[in-house]
Image (cartoon, rainbow, N blue to C red; front, side, top):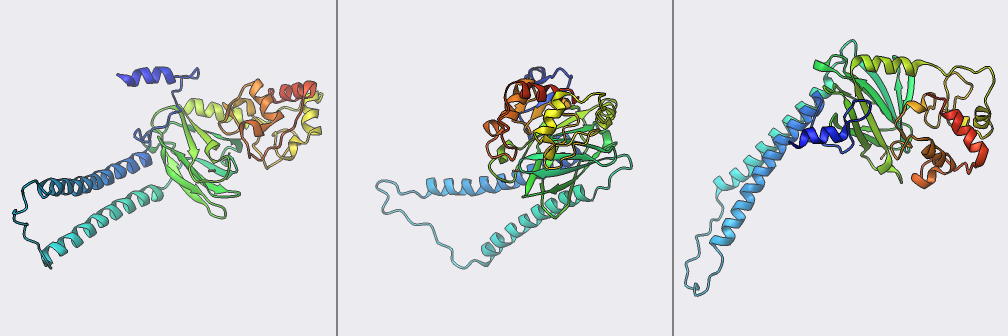
Length: 334
Ligand code: CUA
């Protein structure tokens, strides 16, 4: 009964249900389901062990506790050096460990060894303190903090991730879509998803990476294939070079924004911060800390340290007309 109400409350203007409150008990991809089933099996085994141990403990406490006027009671016989009992409590845990290890290895390798279908979407994610760089090598798209992928029924058009890091170890976790995979400097990791339902799925960095670790949010926007193709076509557009450079674009240059940020189609090609070519198409600023609105964009430019203390973007302290001009330019980056 709650599910339709929740879906109604979470529905977005785009028609996509937003899963901002993540739920790892609601797996929506083949890897997430395999990991969920493994987790449930291990939960059942460890739950059964807990029930047996706690049950014996409670039974013993009640059955053998000292009662009033009971001093003459016979003590139960003690058992010493029983080979059968010692063998049993050695062999049973070993068997349990083998079962858990076997199931875990099979699940992990099952996910890792799955080869991509020929029409898989390849996405390269690079972790930065404290944001996510996102490339689509096959489509020549670069974006940040928001990954768009097509719905993939029966692994048709599954999305394969290549995970790297430029600085410290980060970890990608989108609970509905799959387990955590680390992004490690000088190492390439892989994972994949084949989400069966459209929606906006939030995730987070889950490996402590510094002051803003908890604010290193990411969103995966799962779209119907036609909508995804439309998004790809839009993202592939470079920004048209206007006949006359706007004051805002000049401000972008004078203030040195280009030293860190790129705008495809212009000479601005900074690589340190997020690519801004289609900034306005993104839902959030500062990897999930602010909604992408003109007012928030202004606050962010004036002082990012206000909403994300410790992030690597310095405060511009820009004011007045200069700020208005710059934001007006950024708002053209659709
Ligand atoms: Cu990146 Cu924690």
